[in-house]
Length: 561
Image 1 (cartoon, rainbow, N blue to C red):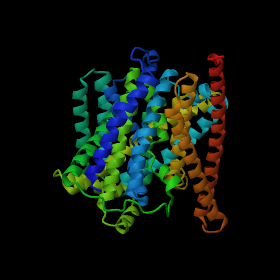
Image 2 (cartoon, one colour):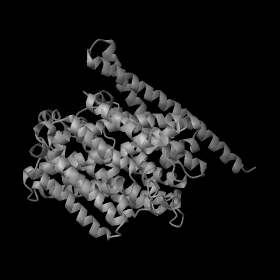
Image 3 (tube, rainbow, N blue to C red):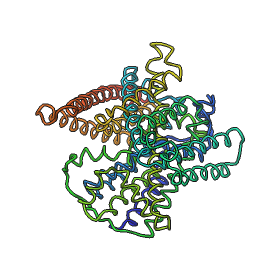
């Protein structure tokens, strides 16, 4: 199939899903009301709650949910063939992805900006809150370690990246100052700050980090790990408008521009897919169901998005009617990013053998090569194109990482503030999260847990949809649009975790692995079963809550004689 046809199909799904399905849910089921006061207005504190224009929030939301995963997932999942991956990206976004993102933001707004922990306490049970918060903290720690490794590895592998990172930070801080303190025009602010970020990419190619600080420091994992977590520290403790929000807003344009011009490059070159459309149900990394459905998470459906929508976006939405473009619309844009990554890997290699050799070097190199190829169609030099693609990777990773530490700080407060008031201190929670994340990055132990991340991520999505369903039942609203996606994601995720954990422990008990791999496989296997148990307990709590809401509804509307 030709790549242009795939893009056109993606645009059609985008248009129908956002214009009709999302609008129907927004106006007929959720009934968004622009006159209702949102938590951002009611509790404005300039730290967590801050009314923000949907134009700014659109960029923030995109960069907050779109990490490296919508690129890495499709590049790995094409091993089953590009057709199953494409179908899941399109169907997952249309029926599940935007539903979770938009609905999570809406119910959090309707519940005074509550986090997922608070929502689970209100809608399910106190026990569900403790279990869910514990799961969320572990889940966030996985992301901190994994994305921290992406940042560190990219900073070492691409010496131009640190300069781009520095100028992005400068541009983002300036954007916050211009918008919220100097009250400058948003267009002027965007142009100035994005140009600063682009200058950083260019300067990085002229002044790589090894020429500035020397080879020893430029190749040190400790140096870049410290830099990454110091960056995240400021994102976690400073008011949202001062650091995290504007940096993610400026960063979104780096990704938007790469995606936009990359798609134009695809239309110019219009290459055909050269890798197989379908290779088989069972491959080396597992069966198509359930493993592919957790391999491609972001870009189809991702539990991370529900954390962003509740703990971040819902506290900044100026009007309820902004939730559809920000929550729903952004998810469809991320779908196009995933399709872009799929087109890159599907058309870049002439055979599965060539792809296999390339994937062994990492998905990041594949993506950078594809960006270089399609931007080259517009006249950009190959070296600059590869640099831009690599910088996109570090931007995608570090801007997610800063929110992870911020959310871990919030989770620490919710979990442990009853134990000691000291845990309410923003600095204490942030330092604890940063130290734990840095340990995972520097020791390499995140690798043994990362294999479970896909399952944990999709499990988070099913639990978020469970909360949405509980809210809809409590309000007497139709539940089908959230309930059936929840069932599919829950069953699929539990199956994936059981499959992965069983195979890991099987290698341990049969003596197939030794040394460090023995310890790592054992750890992963038992953690996977722990996640399944936690999921089943939360599922049971959810079912009991559904039963209560159904009984209350029956009492409120007695059957006709």
